[in-house]
Image (tube, rainbow, N blue to C red; front, side, top):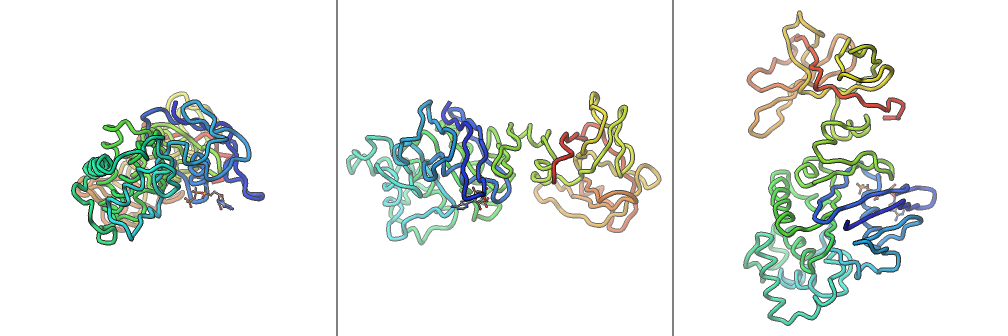
Amino acid sequence: MMLRLSGVTVRFGDRTALDAVDLTVEDHETVCLLGPSGSGKSTLLRVVAGLQPADAGRVSLSGRDQADVPTHRRGLGLMFQDHQLFPQQDVAGNIAFGLRTGVRSGGGAGARPGAGRLSKAERAERVSELLELVGLPGAQERAVGSLSGGEQQRVALARALAPTPRLLMLDEPLGQLDRGLRERLTVELRQLFRRLGTTVLAVTHDQGEAFALADRVVVMRAGRVAQTGTPREVWQRPASSFVARFLGFENIVPATVRERGADTPWGRVQVPKGTPSGRCELLVRPAGVRLTPPEEGLKCTVTGITFRGGASAMVSVLLQPVAGPPLTAESPLSRAPDLDETVGVTFTGHEVVVLPNAAEPA
Ligand SMILES: Nc1ncnc2c1ncn2[C@@H]1O[C@H](COP(=O)(O)OP(=O)(O)OP(=O)(O)O)[C@@H](O)[C@H]1O
């Protein structure tokens, strides 16, 4: 196991930024931290980097407690949001900085011992290798200011990878880039980390990015881990209405389960077999909201249609039912109803997720 946090707590005055957090990252694994602003993601990275002391708990890397290990000896590569390239140096100069020992945050913090003893020729060779790796071959002499945002991110990545860190930590690495470029780079990063066997802990706001990049996601809420699992597990089975809402799911209502169904403001909804009776919250994924002729099912008015983009030509259909909160359905563009049309809605049982902790504040 590469990284283990046990019971890590960080307080700022009376605010608890991290509350007894347990977390592991296995060798060669990419873990993405997700969570709303202020949930403690950056603080967690800073504790692992040794830039923020913990008030309680332990951080160990490769089985070794890091309490007395300074940042530059932890063997980490850091790539933070403000990627802090040195504008007065060319691309090669920036990457070579990551190769030297004793590098602090912003660059490749903590080069492995020995990396600083490279000869000039070896350094040039390594810079050239790293530029190939990040898809910018031959860019050594370009001025940082002449690079596009995406190219600058690549240089920052090359710099963070330069000392062959045992753990690469990324804080919103692609945060400032436009969506298309971000999606492309995310896919490339994933392939690159796979090829290199890099172990990665990344923070992102963007769920698509986490989904594309992560072997495992960790959803944070107010300094605690709200859920952890593979992206698929978390999207298919959000553990609470907090996680479901954070992931962008809307169709969530209070419900009372009895027999094989639940009473909801939208009427009876079928629930998975074995769901315990009692109060809960239900999530109906948009794919499980089926549009029917108005005389069947729950009668709704179409209040909006939003194009979801991409080649799939799917749209989200916003609906106001005659009873209960608004609903979102998913539909192929070719079969989408018109605005203000009256439609019926039925629910598909296998797209219904029971969220256990109804007592939790949303
Ligand atoms: N140096 C500090 N002094 C006081 N409070 C801090 C400090 N750093 C963080 N906090 C507080 O700790 C909490 C967690 O902050 P943190 O930056 O880790 O959240 P985050 O999840 O990374 O948020 P964001 O997504 O906005 O970057 C917040 O309430 C924040 O205000």
